[in-house]
Length: 364
Image (tube, rainbow, N blue to C red):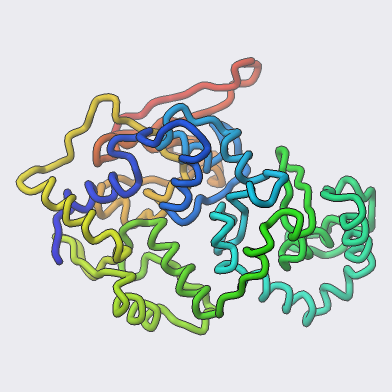
């Protein structure tokens, strides 16, 4: 199947629930529906105009309130904890019932901690952490008081904090809640439904699911647009061959662009509808109110090469760029309207401003 760039943009706008934006009804049920649709939402703690996943939700859910996400992420009753944080290359929010497909990274880290001596080095503090959390419930690093510094990921770290992170990264503890930069951890069985914890799927199933989840996230991926981890026993070519043979992935071409592109197989009818809707047109009709500000980590703009190829829009998140090299500002959000990007807005916190914000608009 060969489609136009216009049809591709139309498909992506509808796939990412931006045509129109804020089309999901108010309520935490829409948060869960959005995460299930996209596969995951990337988590980032930076909070200027809201955290990244909150901006993603705000663009798609009417009257969005951040507490809806927190109620699903940090529910104290396991059966109500419908979302959970996990690593899929980066820290993401996923549906809790998909957790069995994301156990491999934690299993690998646990094996590494045991084999490279990390666990032995941190065992005195790790034992105390497990004993106290078992007896007292969710605790943060601050609850353990001072401890000696040990070598850890980003440099010398208090031993109790390192032990907590090791146990969490190994899947032995889970995040109970977070407030700002403070995280509380608890036993997995107190946070995750038993049937989810006890379910085991094969390594190959986990890898296939993760690979497909990244296609769900993008909606439309270039041939090499989905990241494949180096330690996967299944490589990209084999994964693509298996999944296309089963109909889980579908390959297409886009006029004016090189190579093969892929969509989740379940999206074939939606893509065909986008083609019909754009036949003979140059752009999707944009309601003047159908404008959305997108997070720097929004799934629609994850693939910066695709962004330039399909939209002729260059975007770089400059929060980690030295000030002298910034073109716009540290927290600039792209503006999406219809099926195009029409500008960007730079958000900032003004010192002394009790309302905590300011903005500069740039129309491209």
